[in-house]
Amino acid sequence: MTAIIERERDGYVALCPELDIASQGNTIEEARTNLIEALELFFETASPSEIQERLHTDHFSVTSAPLWYPSGSLWRVYVIS
Image (cartoon, rainbow, N blue to C red; front, side, top):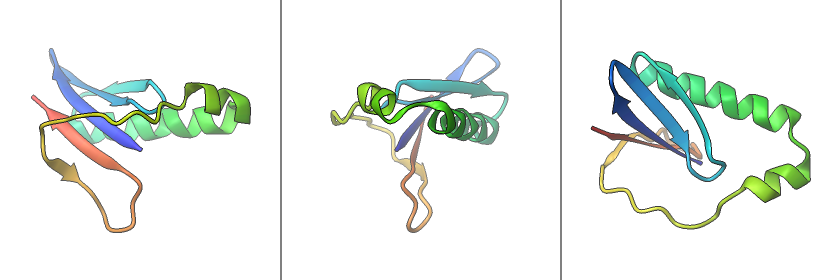
């Protein structure tokens, strides 16, 4: 999964483009944490067919370098200012 985090007014908006799920926070870390929580709730409640319908597997082009990419993680986080 990909998290694109963008500064917006006084905070940050985080988007997972593969599922078109977004969240926000006052800091980059808070926006990332809130997005993960939103995705966890989605996966807990969505049916397999809903997940398949929402899943976008297109390739996304982002020019910013990865900010956070722990070894073995499925997450790529980008910050766009």
